Length: 282
Image 1 (cartoon, rainbow, N blue to C red):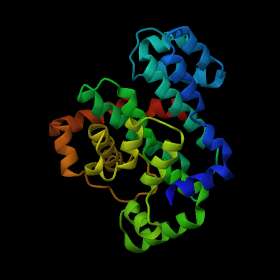
Image 2: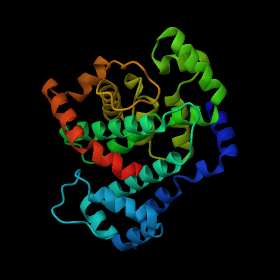
Image 3: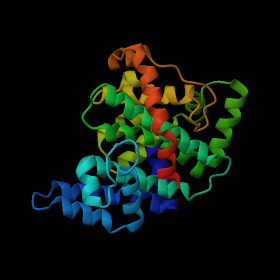
């Protein structure tokens, strides 16, 4: 059912199917033993607007580099090759979707929530001393992409879901499941599978409301699950949810964070939130 819906959406919006192409071109360069950091930089540099965005990201407060980053090779050296590849994906997706008006959706609030969740997920990964902070960041950024597809391309169903939410007062993802037979997390994961993204991104998107069901990447999924709930609790935008989803006990136990860490994670996110919004959305 869901793969058929995604294929139908892609037929009507073929550009959507190609958004991960640059990600895979960079990955091919990374995997080529004959390539170098300069080869990766040239691949990114072929898109001047994207290059400028990556330099703005490298110069934001997240990385605390003491001098200004002036080149893509320097940015890669600071952030890391794999991490820059993931950030290229994030910047490409936001650039595409942010140009499209969506009826009945506050896109500014949607991206505020997505970026807030991304920063919170990155902070959780930082406190857990995970190796790839940007992977957590991108998973957080993508977690509600299925809802964007629902609002953009399945407008009649989205209208029905929102009306049912208003009547019931229930969590929106539960209403989606009742009304449609699937929810936005499943739809988003199907799109990421079409883009051939890694399971380390797909599984947290698919199970960010059901972290107990994550099998291959349970820690990454628990991270996005917690970040999503915190983003709602801190009122960092919204993707249509009016209630704050509770944190599942098993996810909390899996992360094994002291409760005192939550305040630090929120404070760290607050320090970088406004600048990150400006980097990605302007």
